[in-house]
Amino acid sequence: QVQLVESGGGSVQTGGSLRLSCAASYISFSLNTMSWYRQFPGMQRELVATLTRAGGATYADFVKGRFTVSKDDAENTAWLQMNNLKPEDSATYYCNIRRNYVDYWGEGTLVTVSS
Image (tube, rainbow, N blue to C red; front, side):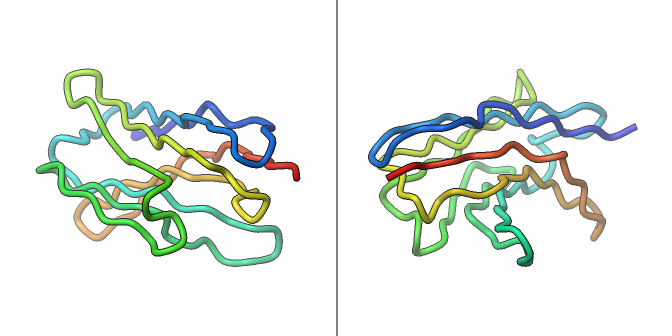
């Protein structure tokens, strides 16, 4: 059964950093595109960053220069390094893999940035 497990969320002050992790089971980052999304209460999820199986990364404009997505195929783990965090980054962050047009999601990890 495919499983994605996020971790690393927490509370930080403005300007701080967090590193989110996504560990995958029964699905490979090496064979699929993965993405990080975030969701504000009452809102739809929005795309934060995407990492192709070849390692090419793209970012939403609101995180460019601050967030970095990476992975280790051998560990089947992906990360989202978040620097210079702002209060508007406070959200639940989700790991996603799309395989054969099917989306797989983790349960999310909460990030709170205080001013």
